[in-house]
Image 1 (cartoon, one colour):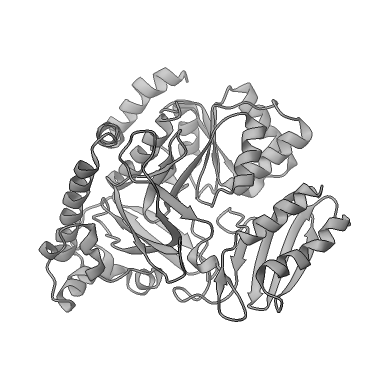
Image 2: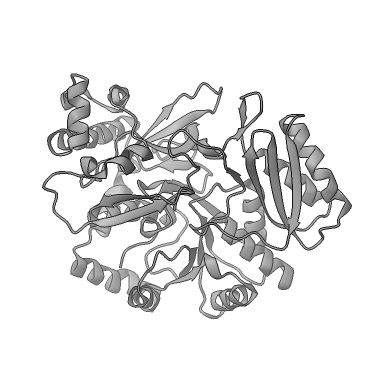
Amino acid sequence: MHPMIARRVVHPLLQWKSGGRVREYLHQLEHSQWYTPAELEALQAARLRTLLDHAYRSVPYYRRAFTERGLHPSDVRGPQDLTALPVLSKAVIRDDPAALRAEGARGPFVERRTSGSTGIPLAVYVHPHTRDAWAAAAMRTRRWWGVDVGTRQITLINPHGKSRWTLLKQYWLMNHGEYSVFRLDEGALERLRRELRRSRYEVLLGYPSALTYFAQYVLSRHGEGAVRLKAVCATAEMLYPDQRALLQRAFGCPVVNEYGSSETGYLAGECPAGSLHIAVENAVIEFAPTGGGAGEAELLVTDLGNFAMPLIRYRVGDRGAIGADCACGRSLPVLQLVAGRTEDLVTLPDGRKTDGSIFSVAVERLVAQGVPVKQFRALQHRPDYIEVLVATDQPDHPALRQLSARIQKLLHPSVAVVVSPVDRIPVESTGKLRRFVSLLATEDAGQPEADDGPAAESQREPV
């Protein structure tokens, strides 16, 4: 399908048929991104008050929370007053999901499901219009890079059991193909490369780990220039500097960082000036101090559009801070993410915690010494024992033997670090490949989470 026809004819017709509001929301967001800071704050505060009033009247959990604290929604005049309400954890949702669903809410609803290492699913329900708002926020970001509805694009993703009809409709009508991250063998990687070249695809989206795995294949087998794209969009995992550099070299294009979660949708996107802008029209992000020093604030998210199952002050498990104003001229606040989720911090024997990105630093030096590292994953089994899996074609390289001592020096003398060369590291049940995974019990769920992130429907325009 010609991109112009898909954008101006097919997408509007599909939206009209399904009752979708993506185009309406996108039109609003295109205007509000240029509001003054005061105007954005007023818009966000008004939407927050509407959500809180609804939650108080219709949601048992929040009705109880307000009553127990002697509060009324009118007491919360803006995001700064949200601290009067409790933090919502995954455990609360799992223990009593019915208490968080709005009484009398009318569907249809979309189920957003994610599960961690415990195998206990966490399901959040949203109205299709909520998902439309997430999709519109993603579209706004991608338009900054010249990527629009109908642009030929392929996503490397956890397929989430989509029907064959839905996949064909996306492919033929909206120029959007999908490849499963669970089937990235050499044959699939070569088919993907050929598809990108043959059908003139311009954009590649997906998890950074899967994207870099494909980029490594392209560079090693075909060299630079074999695949040229307009943009690569990385989502649902932390994007590390070495991954960004590799993707830029492999595909000769900008790499766009996007942030969100499966439960709260699309939250922030990167502009050409390099800032990750928060979609404050759709969400409130609070920065709760953790006591760990600068940059150690925990992110609490309030989805302003989910009236079916409101998530207010939801602990997403990430860390970050507010960044400086951006040179692009948009008043949308800037989010600075801190590498690693809160449950994926390294716990040292003396009780201190450090960031899991420390392993990336050590492995980057290993690569600089000439070791061809395809992937790696650090697993913390105990505070004093860490196993590091390194996928490489040269398991006997002398520099590899130095990695244990290097990581131990960065962490703690009493931490035993065992490096295990492997052929390949399998992806997790979500289709991701995190660089550090803590296997220690966490306060919230008993095990570390492996959320699906935003790269489900929230990262793709519904058709």
